[in-house]
Length: 303
Figure 1 (cartoon, rainbow, N blue to C red):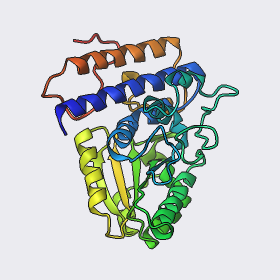
Figure 2 (tube, rainbow, N blue to C red):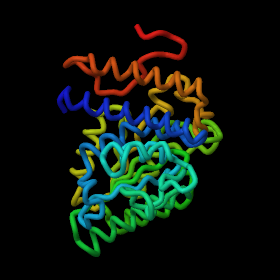
Figure 3 (cartoon, rainbow, N blue to C red):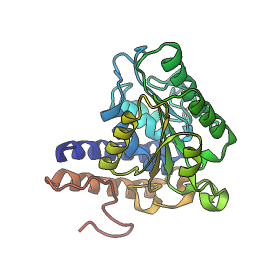
Figure 4 (tube, one colour):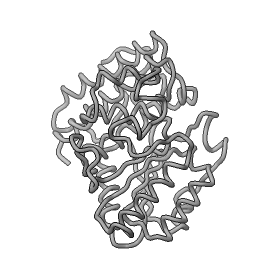
């Protein structure tokens, strides 16, 4: 991946993070933490990986993405708007009465949304059905992707779906778990410790890929591993280590930002930090890092 491409992706993700802050501030509610942590994954997925056409969103041969952790809709909406599925200015209508952008994605009203999600685990199950239909019924080369939270995998439905994916040899299925270590009630290790996650998925027959979900070079390698496993009969899972709230210093690794919107002062600070990140990215040369990170810490001036 060239430095120019990395910069392009990072700038896209940074703009998406700005929209997440603006959306949740405008709505005075929502889920910024997990949306911010998974923005780099969705940025890579929609710009480098999936075969999609915003001008033809119902193309029967398109790849599919299901946001199983549907509460992170602010991030998905930002990406869909920036890719041209609907106008970017509509993002500010999120969670308002009459808007097609509700707190959780609705496949019946929102262009680009493949499945209505919110009840944890169900989106992943639907993705398994899509993958089975594509591979074993239609016999088409269609890939299906799904994003889960590490708190979400506490749901028993997730493991029933994994059993299904392995049984039907869905090697066209690529799921990702956003392992940011936090859920609404605190650290996942304290609420319900699911480790070792890798051994659990491996025991179901998955191709398990551990990576830094905020690093584009590692995401590139992870998707390469998925494509290398095509034909093996093994579904793929990415276990992506991420930082919850990445990009906004006071939100990083703070469980309280799982599900609330920033107030006026918090919004202003977040946007100031993200603008500083944008300026730094614009100025960076050929040695640009492949990893997303926060430019300034809370209360400190940019150097």
